[in-house]
Structures are given as C-alpha cells and as structure tokens.
Length: 637
Image 1 (cartoon, one colour):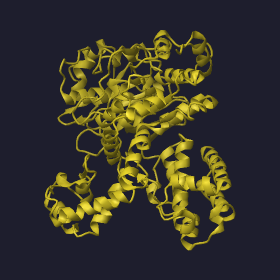
Image 2: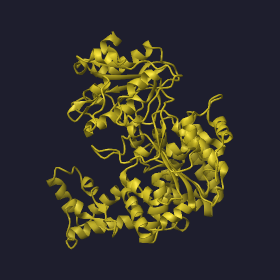
Image 3: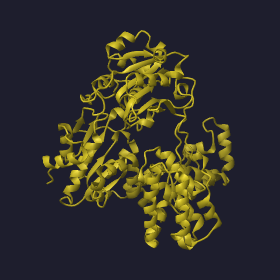
Image 4: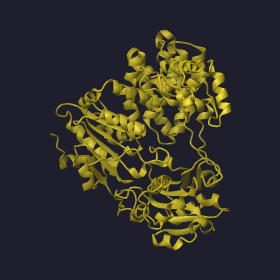
C-alpha cells in the first residue's frame, strides 16, 4: 500500500515552489489521492504544479507493489516539454520504462493504431498526418480514371471548392478498413468510379500514409479485435493521469475509456469544463462529463479578487468555485467603448490604459484577442487590426535543409523547445538521406525522421551521437539570437566532413544541403500582429483560441459578431450580475466559454472593447458590478 506523507509533499514543495510557499489543503488532497477521480480546476489554479508534485512523489515510490508504471497524457508536446523542464533531473526516472509521457495521439498511435496497421498491412506506417494523407490521395486520384468524375462533381456543387474538399469527406470503414465512399455519394461498389477511388485510397493507405482520423479508426478496430487488451494495459500502468481533459473529443474519450477500463488502473483526469473551447462539437456541449468523486481547485493563483468577481458570472459551470488570489492586486475590469470612426484604434487605446496604470514594464505581457479571426463585414479581428494575419502552421516538407531550421524558428516564436527543434532537424535529415544516400544504406521503405534515427542508432551510432550533440548546440545558438545562416553553415560543415552523409555524393543531396533559399511558407511576419506602443510596451493581436493556457499581465477582448449577435449582446445580462439560464442556448454557451478563457488570462488587467451603441443604457448597472467605463477618445485624447 502506497502512502504519501507530509514529508513527501514537503520534498516536492522544496523543488517546485518558491521559498516559503506550500501547497494548500485542496492541492494536498489531490496529491495524496490514490484512487480514480476527476479534478475540476479553475483558471490559474496551479494544477500543473500539483500534478508535477504528485508525479515527483510517485516516482520515488517505484517500483510499485505488483509492478506497473505511470502514464501521463496531455494534448500537446509543449505540455510534455514543460513537465520535463520543470522537473529537471528528477524527470529522468519518470520518462523511462515502464512509464509513458506523451500526447494522447502518440499513445494511441504507439499502442493501438500502429500495431493494427502492421496486422492489416504487414508493415509499419510511414507517417500519420492528415495533411500528408490528403495531399497523397488528391495526387493519386488526379492521375486515376476517376479524375473526371471528381472535377465534374466539384464544378457542379457549391459544397466543394476544390477536389480536396470532396476527398476529405471519405471515411474508413471500421469493420473492413476499406474506404467508405457513401460520404461522397458513391454507394455502388461495382461502378468503375467507385472502384477507381477506392483503389486510390487503398494505394495511399497501404503505402504507409494515413490521417489522424484513420489512426483512431485503426485503434478502435484493434480494441474490438483484441478485447483483452485493456488487461494487458492494466498490467503495464498502475496510474494514468490525463491533463486538459476538457479538450478531449468523443473519439478520444471512447478509446481511452475502453483502454483503461480495468478496476486496478487508477485514472485521474484533470480539466476545466468552463474552458472547453476546442473539444465541443459545433454548437454542442463539452464531450467530457466529469464523474464522481470530484476534487476541486477552487482558487486561482493568477489574478486577484477584482478580476475573479468579474469572471465568476461568465461561466457555464458555476459549481466550480473561483476565488481570487489575495496576494495579487488586480485592477478592476474595464470596458473600452468605441464608435464606427475609431474601432481600429481600440488596441492603441488599450495601450494608453496600460501606461496610465503603470503596468508597462519590460517583463510584462499584453495581448488583444478576439473570437473571430477571419475577415468579415461584421466585428472581427481584421476590423480592429487591419494588418492581422493568423500564424501559419508550417509543415516540414521543404526542398532544402535550411528551410527546416527557418520553419522551426517561425513556429517556436521565441519559446524554444528541444523536442520541436529535434523534430524539424530530423525531418530535414530524413529528406536529405532520401535524396542523397543510396538504397543499400537506407533501404526501400520511405524514410521518416523516426526511421532515420533508428537506422543511425543501429548502423551508425557515432553519427547519431554527433548529430544529437550538434542539435543541442544549434538550438542554444538559435535561442541566443544566432542567425540561421550561421547554423546552416555549421550543418553543411558537419554533413560534408563527418557522418555517413559525407561518405556519398549526389547532385540532389548537395543541392538540398547547400541551398540558401528559404521556402516562402516559413516566413512569419512578426510585426503584422504587434503594436509597439513604447520601448517596453508591445501588444500582440491574436485569437482567443491561440492564447488558451497562457498567462498575461493584461488582456483586451475585442468583441466579435457570432452568427446574429455580438459578444456584448450575449454577455450583457451576465456582465450586469445576472445568471446563466438553466438551459442556455448553444451559441450563448459557446460565447461564454470563449469569453471565460479570454477573461481568465491576465494577472492584473482585463478590458472588453465593444461598440458604444451596445452598452448604451447599461452603464450604471455595469458600474455597480465593478466595471470601469472608458472610451477610445477618452484614452487617446
């Protein structure tokens, strides 16, 4: 029987908390809890720190009686990197066998989807990536006898802008693992067009390229074919901890529930239903339903009472307590009104407010966010900030090695993560190997970053050691502000004088390695979404979804129009102290969740920008609830 003592918690506090700080009773209850439960954590509640403390203590208790390890699942590699960074050397035992640290997708791929693919096709998949699947399918179909039918269907229908829009709708049948073409109107499998498109789907899939959606279908099929799999998983993992549970969708929940169904597996799920802005189906509820027993983290470490009072009514689940941090002196919330003539000056007005309150220090972070990022004729980010451009998602498929480094730098955006950098470099080296090294070295199976790393580990271990050492150096140089060209020059030096790459020559490989022309898709205009108000004050503009999980010094919510109403119209009864209806409409719930995420980002200042006509007549009621009222002309005057 494992026991977590006060001494265990004190040890974790010494590593994770500032000097003199301790966990409160709510966090201690969670840290000590060793049975299945769900944890409802309000924004800024320090749930990650409490989770780290629990993991740190459990790692000291291993091996567990009866064996088994710890499985930690989250939604992004960034979260995993954060866990590793904060635990430092203590993380070594946690990330090694029999434990698992990774994303839900990587766990399902490793233990379910890939084994099923091997079982069905006799080989490992080459890559699991929806964009690659769609591109490969579109290319294969364009060269097939079905191309005419596809283009004709697209031209006749307003539902599809391109052939890819049509092909994206093709699903995979769970029972047969064959393409289900009924989703694009082809039901008769004896017809030539059906056979042609079905054959293209099979060709791409059997080549080892599959989408994330198909990976989940393979996982479900594997669970269906091997009903005792949950027992095997139960023998491998004693504790399963899932973070940001509100962001899981129904498919992920179904697979995880089936996999961790054995009574001996202790599953603890942590999340906040009020921040479920990613997982809910369109106009629907969050798909995670917290179960009993429930634990609560009811007080925020992030913001003070003045902000917690304003945020509290803007929630779909008011049963989750939300108390402010008495040690943080937050300013009261502000409403910044504008009219049609000065809508595009709202961000500048927010900058003036920041300066007026004396918050503009070099270490402070300020963001202006909105729900709708696409350009429309109604309230949206581009109307507030005409140069707004959403950050591009750069996929690592380039014609030269330097572009992989440039793409990483663009994606990292000054938040450098070793895992992401290594991924980009190894993807680039896999492409270099494919066009440079002979078949007798790399084999006939298409190379991926993971396959290349396994190949080097087995056949050229010293080369892999040299690459890994240099990757760490390159990342340090990037983080220190070194130019990409300098790092590229060192790459050329390494791969032309050392490692297996230097033992072979090819025109294609030399061009891929030495070309200095960075792919245009790697470019990110860092200034188009940034307002520079002073030497110490920059305000970044983005969507609410892009800042989820972040902490800011101050946040401005730029109201958008969602369907028939603006944010302020949905929220006004709540802003004035009213309560959410017992059965709120779906659009109201969606608006409340997005607003809650935006309002709970800042530590010191929150402001809502909305049109003066939409607050007319509500001013006194808003002031009674603690809102300060200012206008754009007032602030800029």
